[in-house]
Image (cartoon, rainbow, N blue to C red; front, side):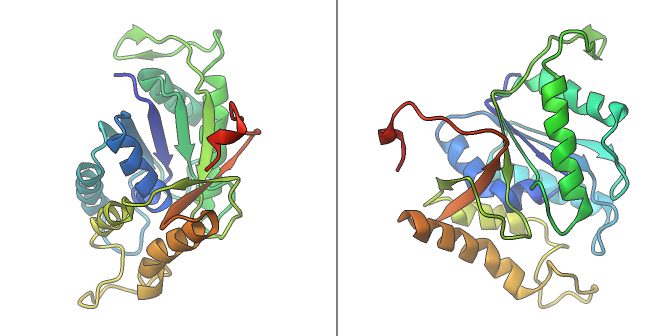
Length: 238
């Protein structure tokens, strides 16, 4: 299955928090989008790997993605090496996305920056003919995405461009709340973490509102780039 957009996240819920509204909008516009989680989030203070699996599946249904896979890398301890790169290359070649979205280049959680560089490096390597991979016994063809963009997570990194996601913020919030064990819940007796506060949950909306304000729309999501984005004409900018 060829996808238009493939979204990578170091943990289940990264894709939703970083780019959930953009994903929902692209799907509504007819794009085929998939998500690949690098780990099962097994080191998370709340919940278990099994509950994360269930929550990720529910979030995928809410967003309407075509496919969601988990590479089951070791949470907290995966590294950017050949073995891990090859697993991502296989995913890139399997789905042949034109656009890849991945973690923030620098963030509070160490897996986010690591995951960002790992995916970016693998996307480049995936386009090299002499790197041979096979999936289910079949040889894969080389494939390099046209674009690799990084969504914004905990840190308020200044975006290189923003996407108008007006009308899709509710879908994003609903997909985030699918992770019932992870976020603000007045009835939960589980330990508190930086992402379980009411403030953090509200930030999902108010950050999008602020970015939207800056471009004159209701809501927006920001992304950073590794190389200059190009437009065909000045009229492409909103």
